[in-house]
Image (tube, rainbow, N blue to C red; front, side, top):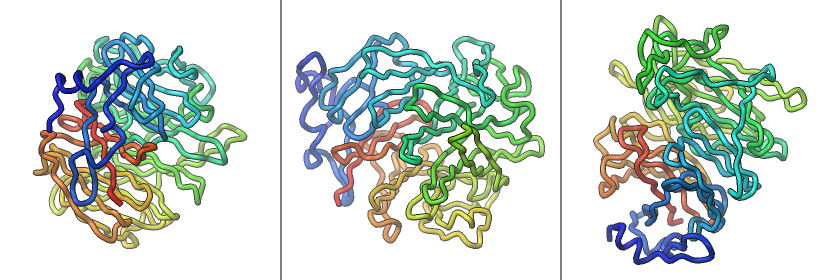
Length: 415
C-alpha cells in the first residue's frame, strides 16, 4: 500500500516530546519484498539522512532530529533554519553528529541540544576557509560524499575519512579528502587535489567552464572532478580513494590513491597508484575491503568496448588488471556499493541504465547474483549506502538524475 501523507498522519502520534512512528519501522515482514530482501520508504516527513547502530539523524523543515531507536521516535530535535540545505551528515558511535550545508560544516556533541560550526584545518594547521562564491546560491557542496560509510576503527579509535563528490550541483568547489580523529570535533584536510581548468567557479550550478575562479591546490598536478569513494583496509592500515571523471587538457581525472596516516605526527602520505582514462574499470566507486581483498564496481564510460564490472583482487594487484577477478557484469555504469555480513549491495544509475530503480544483490559474497527493478519508486539512483542499523536495515539516498536528493530507501536482507 502506498503511504500517503494522510495515512502517515493517521498512523503517527506525538509522544515524549518527539515523533512516534508506526511499528513498521522495525519490522520486515510488513513491508514489500523480493526473494532476497525486504524494502521500504520511511512513512514520515523526516528525511533520514544517516544512521549508525540504533542512532539515526534526520531533518525536516527548519529542524534537525536524532533518533536512538532506529527511527521509531525522534525525541531529540533542534531548530536549524537551513535544514533543507543539508548535503551531508554522519552519526558517530559515541553519538556525535557531523552535518554540513554546502560550504559549512557543524558538529553536535550533546544529542542535538546544541551545535557549533567547525572551522576546517589545512595540513599546515591554518584555517581552511571556503572560497567566496560568484553566486551566493551556489557556494559549492564542499563536504558532500557519494558514499555513506565513511568511518572506521583505526587502532581502537573511530576515524572519519571521506572525499567530496562535487562540481555537479550547488556550484563549484575544490576537491579534498577530509578526516577527523576526535569524533568530528575537529575536521582537517588529508589531501587537496590540484586546480582543474575545466571546473572553476563561474557561478553555474555544475561549476563547469573555463572562466571563473580557480579552485584547489595550485602546487598539486593531480586533478579530478570529484572523489567517488574512500575506504580503509585494516590489514594494511591504509586508506584508498578513487576519483572521476575523464581526461581534460591531456590530464587524467581518474585516479586511485593510497594513503597512510601517521597518528603520532598527524601527517598523511598519499601516492597515486593508478592514473588512467574514463573507459577503464578504475573509473569506479564502492571500494570495500573484506578479509584482505578489495572490491569495487565500475562506471566506465567512453568508446566501446566498456571496461566495466564488479571486481575483486589483492590490494597489491590493484594496478594490474590481469590479476583482477570479475565477480559480476551489470553491463551498465555503476559506482555505489556496500558489503556487510556477506551481503553485497550495489545499484544502477537511473540515468545510465534501463532500470527504473536497479538493485544488484549477492547474499553470499559474490557466489550468486540477482538484480531487481523496484519500479514503484520511479526513476531513481541509490547513493550513500549506510551500514545496517540495529534492526538490520541498510539505508540509501534515492536521487533523481544521479545527484538531486528525493527520498530514502531501506533494504533488509532476508538471510
